[in-house]
Image: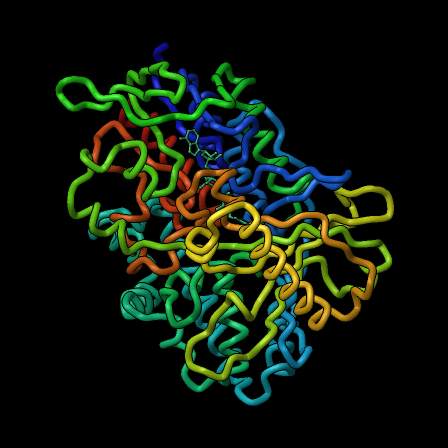
Length: 499
Ligand SMILES: Cc1cc2nc3c(=O)[nH]c(=O)nc-3n(C[C@H](O)[C@H](O)[C@H](O)COP(=O)(O)OP(=O)(O)OC[C@H]3O[C@@H](n4cnc5c(N)ncnc54)[C@H](O)[C@@H]3O)c2cc1C
């Protein structure tokens, strides 16, 4: 079997690039090892609940933004979305709360009221960050692959806004922490927790430029997707089929297939079948799995091999909860980012000090009558889930002890829930590995910790000329919007240059 483009993996990245190529008339075939689409955000169905593994932060659904741009080309309607403002609320260990709202006056007033000890600096930090974010977004509109562009194109992208170009160039090697001087530890933790959630890095680790995008984009408007992110994945799969593209589920790919000259010609499936690609092969696997599994380490240049060893993303431990409507009426927002401990030491350990509580909205409860589906996301060091358990029983014990600890923290931080909430299921990094085959179950992107938008990492190119990458470790951020943006860039590149 031969197709023009073969895509390995049906996460949001693989689905989006396939949907766009199929809509443009390309003969595309997507191969997915699971029986349904979505990867990290494939839906979880249990006891009448339909859980969204995502935590309901879906920005950039406004007219003209990335999702509208993609769906304007597709033969299917976009999933229904509705505004969800404030995007989320941050609850701090002293129970003070800040709503992350679109309205700047309200937002700044909340900063002043919550952080009186450094009000001016806190407001100043956000004001500066918003200006840099807008300047970067304008530059990205002029040169959509700014991060991977050569220096001439980067200058072209930045030059029309000469004042902010200077700001951006000056901040190229700064961490976010460099811009937090004069703020209190409380304010720093407020930023640390958000950056960990949005950029998978704390203020000490997160590149300042990237943090401006992460902190400001959801604040400009957040949306709920009816059916959650799994509905987006299903819609993209429908679009591929409606355009005449092919999706094969339950089809694990073993590795790339090479001809005698060493050129990649297609993929070998676990079943022994070969699927040929006459034009291009796209990997929706992570950066390390693309090289480690598909391309193969003997075809990987040594400098890439070395850099892969040092790259890490976060692990997560998820609690899928069922909440009564009575409890839903007592919580101040559907999306609450909770910081449970200030941690006085310099470093911040998100694994023990924060969680995201994301309830399905009233318009889309995804639950049996009178209930709501809730996804609670906590961070977890991945190694401990793979190193210490020798058998299934030990894994379950570990799962239970982590669950007990988070259950206690949940009730301490959100006493208004009372007994009106129950655990339906959990997902550990091992579960995520089983579902997606991402190494050690690591999730999220690399942009937060990549030297200003490192073009070697944040890029669809690989070391092979006809093999490309898509997904959160190839995108300017570990979010659905960033993955979609990167998938559209790749689709444009393939239709313009290769096909
Ligand atoms: C718990 C959680 C909550 C999140 N919440 C949000 C949120 O609220 N908002 C937001 O914008 N983003 C959120 N994200 C981030 C976002 O969902 C992910 O970054 C995005 O879905 C990743 O997509 P991807 O294209 O990288 O593919 P992945 O999801 O990694 O999918 C890759 C696919 O490849 C398949 N595959 C792997 N190996 C093979 C093989 N050998 N052969 C065939 N197929 C293979 C896998 O089965 C999988 O389907 C969240 C992520 C997680 C984990």
